[in-house]
Image 1: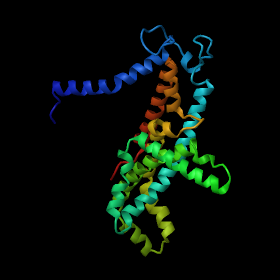
Image 2: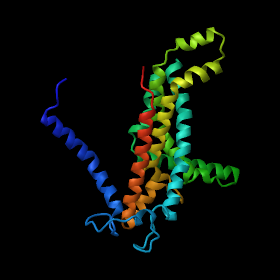
Image 3: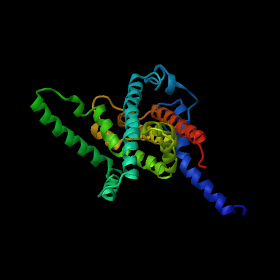
Length: 279
C-alpha cells in the first residue's frame, strides 16, 4: 500500500479545517461570557444554556420559553414528516420497483422535480394552492379550515413534498437489491403474502426504512426556505433562529447551534455505528 504524500496530507487537513472550523468557532463562543456571539473572548460561562437571564438580560436556551416552544414545534413537524415519508416512500418505492405500467419512466423523473425547484418557490406554490382550496371549501362548507392556512399542518405538507422524494429514493435503492427468489421460496412453502412481507421483505428493508426516517427527521429540522413561506404563529426552530438574528444575535444562537450539531451528529453517528454492513 502506497503511503500518502505530504501534499495529500495537507489537502486532507485543509479540507477538514474548511469543513469544521466554522462549526468549532460557533461551538466555542456558545460558552463566551459576552452579550455578543463573536470575539473577543471574555470568559467561560453556561449562562447561554441554563442561565436565568440575570447576567445578560436573556435566559439560556434550555429555560427560555421561546426556544423551548420552537424546539417543540420542530418536533411536532419532524415526527409526522418522518413517519409519512417512510410510509408513503415505501409505497412509492414498491410501485416504482415492482409495478410495470406505461409512463413509469416519466413519473420517476417527475418525482425528482421537487428536489431541483427552489424551496422558496415550492413554499409559495403550496401556500397559494392551499389558500385557494381553503377559500373554495370554506365558502362551500361555511366553516373555517385552519389546517389549510399557514401553520404547522401546512409546514408538514410543504416539507413532505420534497423530503418524500429522498425517502423514496433511499428505500427504492435497497429494494432494488432484494433477491425476489426468497419471496418465491416462501410462497412455495405456503406462506401468505402478509407473512412474507412481515418476515422477509420488511426485515430486509429495515436499514433503508430507518435511514430514510432519520434523513427525513434531520432534513425537517434544518429546513428553512419552504418552512418560512408556510409557517404561522408557531415557528419551528430555524424560523426562531432567523427571527433572533434579525433582532440582534447573542451567543444563544451559538448555544442552539451547538445543541443542533450534537443532536444531528449523535443521531447520524448512532445510525452509522449500528447499521448492518452489506454481505
